[in-house]
Image (cartoon, each protein chain N blue to C red):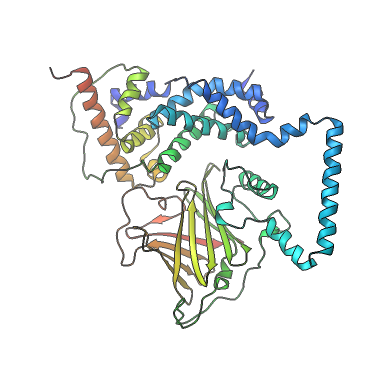
Length: 305
Length: 177
């Protein structure tokens, strides 16, 4: 309606066609980034026949050496554990984000990144590339603890209390579909990747989370594509189906509450205790994955069937 | 070279085609980045990031809608991501019942540079909402979702941006003697 003001209509018309020439360096910088991105392919193309043979021979030699060493020095079960851990992201920072331009640290990570980008919904299929990542099966039994408080004498909570979160979760609203995938990637470390796909099937953003057991304490960590910073919350209490994590240094939210619902889904609530109004200014939790209420921000996820 | 041929060549990572695509669209796309990001160098960095995304994700373009529209959307997203990262998206408090009361009629046929100069003088929050609503044609609901703000905040920002813009035009064109 206000766009009918001729001034703004005029601005709209002209702004659409603003054409500004970037510096000559712009293409050079972009080309250099593209070179890095496509380097492995380009190098392979330039190798002459004997070069390929020599590389193949070297690889064969290397593989043979590794095989001999693994058979003679390492115990079989140890080498299997190592192989599995090499293939999976160990730290939340290592986990690739949708559309990330960070150079992957290993071929496995490059493959993982490619799959994440190619299939942002991140569907785990039995026998698919994610198989190794689903190291622990879903714990069918509900985790019930009464009167348990973390680290306060009653009994010690363990990361295994959150085994139930491993797997795929989904939620849909009028704007699109939110997915969340949790894996056990190493002893004491679960990582989760959340993403949102809008109704035009475009990926809007991804979000990384982790549940980590460190020095007998359990933390919920979150890192978003936009913020790029990790925020950690310490498990403060775990009772029945409710876990509360706390970080007193954050203005909002100071608490993250995860509740496992009887329906099989879970809710994650970001809030302050005592409650305060959700700040007006732009905070990253105000996104399509979450419902913003006056004093808390909630996300409800259902188990993907 | 037709658009389809250009896209196909870029999908094969043909460097000449990528350069051609850059030359063809970089002017308009840099214009978009500069509407959102004031600093020239930073706007150019956003352009490079956006074009990198375009060229490495070109397989994702399904041909639904215009190719230029797809690139434009990536540039807007890239600009917003930059502003979020820099924590530059600060929004004034919601203002209830705020009307655009200025009855000054300003109707100027403005050049591109004049528009950029005006946008440069707006606070980032005003400029972003103004760009998204007036130029990109987003609805307030969409802006609220994109920026993580309420619909009322989006409306307030737009009204304040328009008021500020009108007063800037009046000052620039009719300076007090």
